[in-house]
Length: 250
Length: 268
Image (cartoon, rainbow over all chains, first blue to last red; front, top):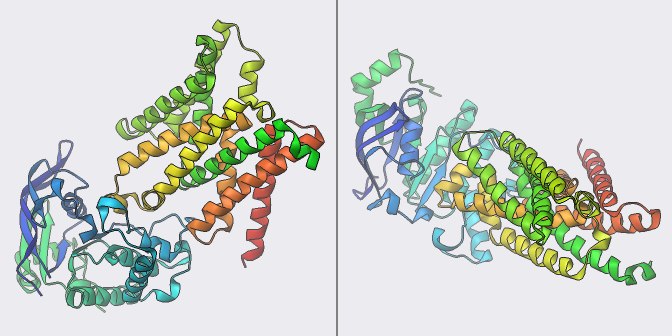
């Protein structure tokens, strides 16, 4: 699935919250078509790393290249889909329908190509179909279950047909059966829609059949390579023994 | 009733009231959803200081209030973001100081009189042509700005982090909302008064939220409740010989109650 075209490159990236170091000299790259799991214990800097790549935080040191451009100069945000951590902890009273939530990603002007209403409707329907939520199109978002909401947020993240999709702990609080279906759906998006996926998780078991690469963090990058190599690595054994990673298999 | 609508003062009140009501409703919906409902209340107190400053300096009180309200809203935003204070603390600080400043200036000017009281309690039936024009123009600006940034504002309100990652200029939108809220509070002050303006920002939006199935409906229903509050409130005030501003607010509350009962009826 790796097409060899580099989409993300981190060069000795460090980040601190005040005096407290969070990430130190992290370097790795992600190629088009990869399905990368960013693993690590709580507080290891996984979410911070994603926020740095997305330009939501600025690194203390180092360089971040996103699709060939330094992230501070990057403007093609419609090429990026993002589902933040705890996305499902939304205000249940928010009056948006499922369709309206997905259509939020159509932003005017520089943020993406201008679309007519009919084209927007088609894209929303397609995205909802891809995540199996067509039947819920007119339901209020707050009335859906956590798993269903998560699917809607994925639909919003892919409605612009992005090249890159970031998901931060997307199945936190979602039941095991729904998680399995969810990862099957991500696998389909990766293999059939050719979307490069960066998935933040601390659950190695649930992703072991789908991811192609693993980047393991513990303030520093302690492993970067294939999933198979990671499972044989010392980093994996250490983290599993210390209880920093969990392994849900279904 | 026909005779009633033919009165010039009533026509002016109706035009200004309806425009301001819709501006309050569409903006209020975003404020309520951002859990920022009390900023209207806080800024209203700040505008009291602005009005007193205008009377003290002998300049148009609406203009002075607008400048002071914009400065205060940006300062409240800055305090939240940079000093790490909770929103209600920052609002509490500025609203108290605004009110205190108003009392001091009004006392110094020796004009703690009917002028100032008309701003405190609103006097929509006494609104003049210039004020109608100003309120209407400002309301149109607020409505156009909110509807023009509708999708970005909705995204920012619903999921700020994802919105930022999608390229939404969240800092700019925060400033836009702060400035629009200031303008709206200053406009609303003439309609329902400083002490009651927060009601027009919160109650119609709350009613819309109770009944809407989607965001467009919420905008429409909030605006409808706001408009009905103004029309029914003015008519009731006229026939029952009640203060117009307070009657508009009480009418909006009755409509909110109706929305609540309707929602309870619809839910199992």
